[in-house]
Image 1 (cartoon, rainbow, N blue to C red):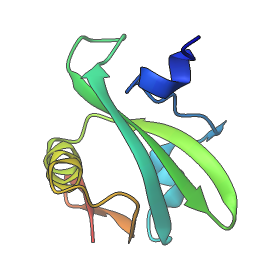
Image 2 (cartoon, rainbow, N blue to C red):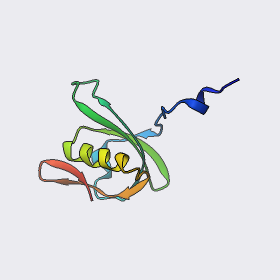
Image 3 (cartoon, rainbow, N blue to C red):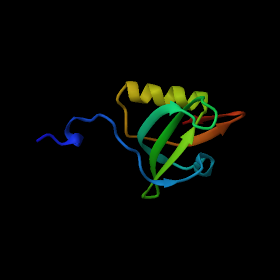
Length: 95
């Protein structure tokens, strides 16, 4: 008998909810990303699973620069990676 987890590519991201703005300036380790559309406004968004201070969190972003950076990391198979999220003028980015 096959187990669903043996053939499913879908991974569920779990962790404590946190506002992404609450981790600006702190180093995090991005573990997983799920791309989709926001349930609030239908625009592209990403759910991000990351570790900060040994605790696993999840958060969401619609920042276009972050979405591009996350797509690039996933495409290049670079997960997990460490980064420091920041706010640069009117947009969010990873450094």
